Length: 365
Image (cartoon, rainbow, N blue to C red; front, side, top):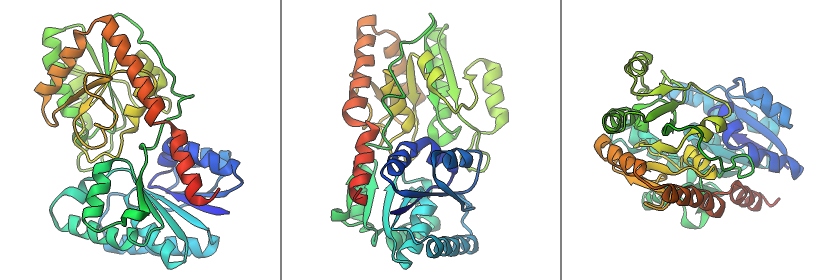
């Protein structure tokens, strides 16, 4: 069996789909990893994949470039003749799926978040919805990462109920992300995300200012990469000003986030970006960390309010600061219970093997 698995970066495939790729290879499947080439492409080849460079402008809206992308996908499918196409992220899900269907290739999509273009009420929104309608309605199956996204697509008639289902996000490797008690006397909060305003980074910084007035020894850390190509990106000068002010500490970008998570007491994600199910929250839960995040689709699936963390209102740094303040006043017994609850929730609902089994079943492996 030949399977094409495609996302908008090789980094995405390596970080989020590695367990599935390994399971496919172990099952004797010939896997073609398709994405724009970056430094993670050789790692995919090292696993045993055949890597195919597929340049794409993931943020662009040029009809000409997108038409060329569709034609490149069609050329690829005609050359490889795969049995299945597994699509992730918006442009592979749209143009890869259309090309696959034109070539008679069975298609399985994963909607790992809607993106702002889908939700904003403008011309781009109408185009994206139309393209999704063309690509997904003929798919063999569409996986969603939270029930709100699936309900929306069903209401809009973009997918068929019998050909769609829910997955627990991308899942998390429970043997790789193991519980780790926090280290050190100072309480550390950690936000891991692309440095975008939509991820609630600004609200995190403002909440840090509020909290530090009352709890001056508290530390707030940021981990993630700057993405200047994104219209919601935080510029480097703003980040440097926050660091100079002492509001937050920037720990850069890491291939292995586990040591930084291990040092944290609590993970925070005040996102109002249209998430699927945030992987960073799953990693934090697997490592036994209490969580604080916004009460929005995707985040609310990972957090049981008052059990393994707190939900706060989006775009509300004062409410976020209040939830952080509540956390800081918990007894050690309460903290231990929250840590244990996070790990149990990861084991019960978000084990990566649940995701892998669902894919293998759809592929007939």
